[in-house]
Image (cartoon, rainbow, N blue to C red; front, top):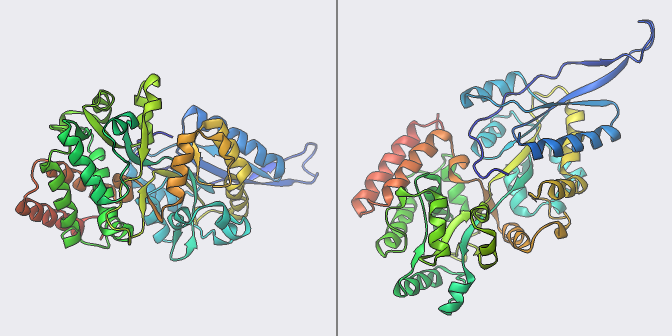
Length: 423
């Protein structure tokens, strides 16, 4: 799964009636074959190969249904809503987040709670995944492939200084102080691409204020000038002032700071597990990860877990066939196949764990033991608000006095009030 999920949305197609003529004259019986359109935004060659096999297996068990494959994407995200309503596909596979949530909220996605019940998916998917798939107690999605975010580090460095992986916030800060005393900067971060800094906001907000507040903020139901948001920036600014982050982070991209981690100039990096792709194979055995520490153990645990989803548009003309197809994609057999074919993680916890490496199994356990799952900031909130938010987060690195924080929060709140989150 590409770690930078495309911001572009979908062009969805209306399925046309498909008639199969067995042969002979027009007087012979006409066999009506239901045609459904499967649209996916996952267009890489490995995903395409997997989809072709999955559809082939489906067709063998459902000879009365023809599946048409579509993988076009919109060049203008703003057109996606109208296309979704007017020219629906029957099953859609796309990145999750705010755009999907807004379609569900607007009644443009079919309620598939009965499918969840019939397929016994409440056993197959952990509560955090069930929550991500639901609105007001009803299920509208099934999750697809995903990856996790965490703090990556070199165990050998921790061992050298007799450091333990921190679970609680006070241990986290103590760890940082020890590293600074040893001449090691705790965190590597490159914010040339601002989504890396936004991840720190995600985790500060989830840990300090709880994932429920984070969800409200992302959906426009909480204010950016709320004292709880100011608390996030205060904690963030305090860690910056203590020298816990590398200097001039905006000068580097995320992968340009990886050498500092390997050379032990820095000790940790908050990143998705795609970070391993940027680490030479000979160094990977000495790279591990841990969950972002807990600020308040009484609050629920949220994690940043970018993921794909499957859904059926409410305007689908072939809901029965689409229901059969989404059940097929969500089945453990097919999720086993996808994991084995693509090497990507499945949200279905009944998938054969032997298909995964030990570190992947650890990531699965971390995510499945969480209470809430979110996309990264730029996808969890609206595109408009995300742009403004990430610009504000960039400013925090250099300007985080009390007056700066008040100004930034007030500005963000004005933007929220005028954004597409509200209107």
